[in-house]
Length: 276
Image (cartoon, rainbow, N blue to C red; front, side, top):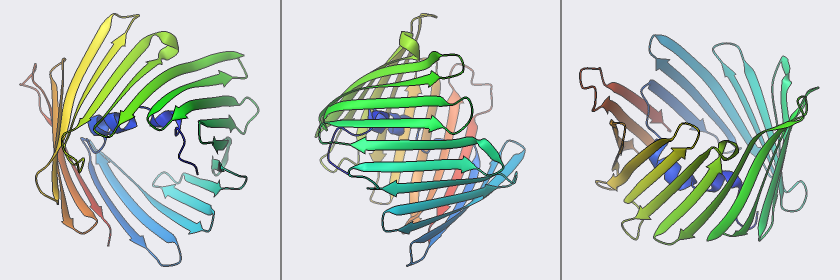
């Protein structure tokens, strides 16, 4: 793939990940293993409230082909085939859930030095067509995405976005929900190694005249331990501690409280990821 503007989903991704990734109110255990012939196995168990679920996933990589297979505790089986460079500068992804043939999907991604195009089509009688495009260079990107329902003949979603990325900061703006909401994100790195960062997000929904402002940060205590925290104007305060217990095996403890309703029980999550 080329060093072009990237996918539309990459606009604001680093800031969004800092505010959302690894925050959880569930108990989760993941155990992964790898083999020299390109096979990865992962088993995950999740307890959410009084409900427990789990899945077993396998991934096989061979040259330009990746095969993903997953089965969960509800006996749902899903597969994904990914072909890179099947044609020049393209990635082709097909996915489906076995015994649910309406879930099939075909996606093609095309990468160029100044543009990226993606198209995804549902493999059923009434498919939804998703398309996105970005133009620019890695430091300045403009893009748009849309979903078209062939049954109703209407666009169900369209979003536009713009991002600016520099060595020490990145900023992006997204106009979504058919023009009903605007989202502005800003991420600033506080050190040259990019282990410490501050982030801010402002979201406005025009139909309800509602504004949400969130600030957060990520700070490395040492090379094995990281702390993240975030707070929004509605009083939701969340924080997490992430520690690499042994190489590639990470323990994450997270929690959230409503500072405007301190009599309510806080949400606490625990995630253990073991990679022998």
